[in-house]
Length: 493
Image (cartoon, rainbow, N blue to C red; front, side):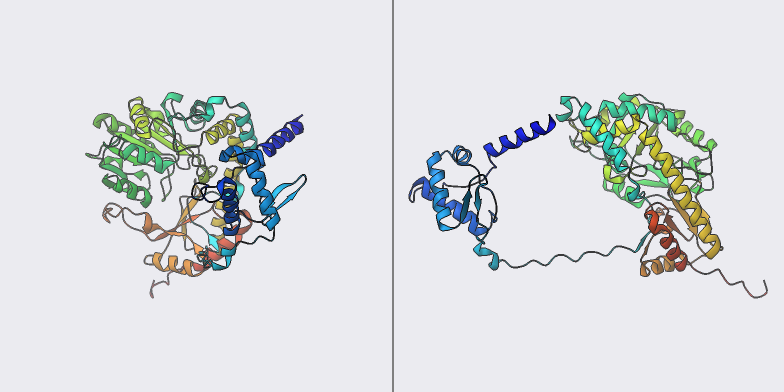
């Protein structure tokens, strides 16, 4: 039955014919419509616009498109067949002759292909999962089910809040897995964390200010890209000192909002201490402020109990932001904001009347992926894989560089390697020369952070997830080869 429908569609397509653009207006006065059509076809072949072997539309289709008689097209085709420009065979239609090479081809100046940038031999940069581990079969199954079950209105303009199917799935999943308290109406789908920041702090479509205003307190170490994005929106960021218990939220002052990574501080590692989680909520209540919770890898923990979302302490004072960039792939461009009720309308107004960022079909696929249990299974599988990667990194350093301290490895997809003072820059440079891509810890330091409150320490940030499984061993070997040696003891010690 399926094959017969496909064959019927193909037969219909053959009868209708392919579209062919021909402009007869410029030469219609010289010899009539047939001559104009003949010249237009000949020029299209000569210029290479119609390549050898291209099948032309049937007489009836082209005549209807051009508004000419069917015999006019038939006569033009016959003349070009006689001249050798076209060929005509029973059952295969009329095609451009294989020997009809465009005359202008030799006159074209060959363009040199741009040089292809050579990537690193070993990619140990933080921020991306193992691309080879994307669950293609399970995702394809979800895509098929989502497409088969999608109502017709899915293929119209999208709701800026996001598909209700995904928001309902996220509401259940985030409550179960992350301790988030929310309802589907408080979730707005976005394309990732950066998009969420743009919606919250950028200008709206009327030219006014964003949903939130600065100054914004941020952790003394964090992504420079986020700080640059905020600066471009006119938002001043104020660094909060960091210690072993996370951000010093007791230093919050006149800021209107604070951005934290409480499940696993980025990039130094470690969760925000429970007393500080409660303290930042008290600050938000007293100041009328808001906490932005970046849950960038909250699902990946190894040697500790799960740490729930700060949002669960007060849903009206926390904006919870997450995505599938670490758990699945950044290529999907799927994220979400769980908003206090008072911000939902303003965020939707900033986003616009229609969904312009996130594919509705991808939203439906993710909803099915979550509801079917495939997302949980994938996260558990990747948690085991990344823990194994972490363990291999720790073991390699213990064997080859025992003087290098590894921190921040109880959770997440990266580790921080503490280096001897004054060796970070030379280590990063040596790694570059050896084809090892990694990040220096100094790159993540806020430019206004002070040495008194957050002392700078030399280190490198190593991503455990980026290389494929078969390439990870060689990457670790190359990493150990660029690390600085242990400091020589001072004579007399």
